Length: 332
Image (cartoon, rainbow, N blue to C red; front, side):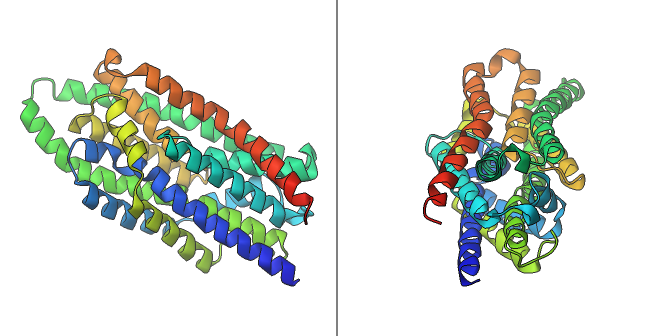
């Protein structure tokens, strides 16, 4: 029994480390557009993002329950805690690698891919809950396509409405509006992304026999929300530069359109208890807005590299987690 507590302690440490890394890895999601248009200074943007991430993380748990029970049933796994450890090591490694190279990859894809790979390595494909895993993958794939489409439409409508307005007045008004949309986007990021670490900790508690349901304990919510907020306060400037300046030249009206689009899509996913990649949603919204502004304004070569990173994340992290689990099994 003592060994179980030690293993669960390792899971909690790794899960909070994942949440912290997710925070600085995904800070760009919430503040890249507002910083690039100078609606907010970097310091103020990070403070707002940290506070709103924490607030959002404390108010919802539906996504955590989805993560905790949809990919596999933790109560039926023989080595569920070890599976979670392998999952978190693989997901953290991938997050750090993509952060180092400034690639806005998905922490959500990394976690889901890693969990699936570790479960298959331990239990075979029969250990995967096919219907639940399919629902999550569909949400992960569909959400960026929806964000791209809505971003394009929102920007197209704004172009029509403000076609005859003074550029100076437009920039001034939407730069102010971006303060609100950046805060809203940070809030929605917390409502969805922070719950993934909550879900994986709860998964481990059930697998270890320390809890008999997927309800998220308050201490798990508080610790995950705090880790996410602290990570956000550190910032991920390489990814901020990629999303805020390298995809296309973002003006305040573009930033406003991208922020309100992505925040709305993420909030809808949270309310329907679906985990989505906030990175994919926000980047796709930026691409959609840029396409509506002027198709040639988007640097599609860079966008293509980002999409490739998205596509390969789940299979690579699944393989990595499977290998890590097999190595761990030699010593446990």
